[in-house]
Image 1 (tube, rainbow, N blue to C red):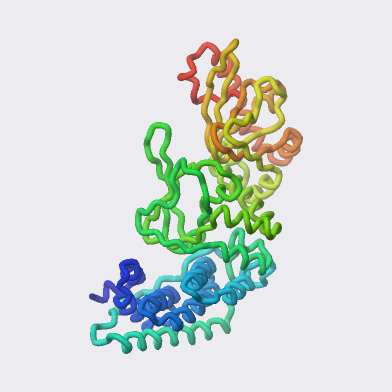
Image 2 (cartoon, rainbow, N blue to C red):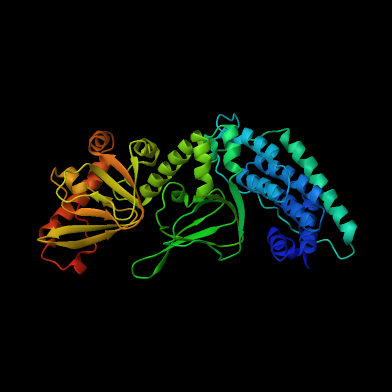
Length: 439
């Protein structure tokens, strides 16, 4: 083992392989060299737990969890506290302290700081502890290194730093914060491990505490397209908390990833028990839906980023099960619909038959022709699977365009193009019309 192998990554690899002694030699050496290395402290404690010193390990896991939260890494701190609880520690006291730091009305939280992992140490010249240390001597040296880290954490705590806002959790009162966090299960995924499968029913939301995940989508042509890479602090899969719509993309681990998993069933039970948590969950998911659509929708993208929260507040959320009609051909338009997740079919009457005009997915717009051109809906839109939509009623739309003329231009351009195509669609084969939206 060489100095170059003395790294967080090497320690995690040893832990994943169940080689706790090797993990302690690496993580303990890093922690001894830099008692402020909070990740090394966590890894040292996990290695010590694996070697049977559970009481010592759990005390240090809890202390390191609070230190991580104190130093602007709340999600990793929460994940560590939850790991300690799974290993048998009573961790509610630590969660309560983290809640006091990050819950609603905390005096230390600021919107100006991004969520980020703790800084990586340089690690230059640090070598793993050698084979001359074994058994109790190795454990004692690990304990000494953790004692140094604990002292360094106490010193840092005397000089408090500003803390970042944590989405969702930061909107809750401290007791509710703790209750929600107790429902978050730490999950570790190895590189290239599948986390979310495209097309599967969503059953959980995830928060990245450590590592990176890759998001991709397979299109109708079968080609996989990368969409994003998400790091610490990122949320994904939140639609599963409010809808049973199918997953719109695939998510896989890029490197070894530590996630916090919120199961839908657990969140539903919590929301029934504590209605305030349910209200915050719904508001959070609503805002996330529109924020995501802002990036891809030609109607919403032109709105200045600084004014998007004002637009978000004007939309309602609607969920439809497979087979439900969203818009009926011939009816007066009731508003503008943005498809967030799921899928719909667009059909139009042709005598006694129904002509399939289009199949639409996330990001598509519905209802713009009847809304803007003051005419009955020109097609029927039906959910083909569980579907989530954002809805701006007719009255709200006309009020919104006075403040946000960008909305009118984007919607009108789409409506005009589709209305022009409508003039010839009935003479075209359905297979040639799949990219048209006739609403």
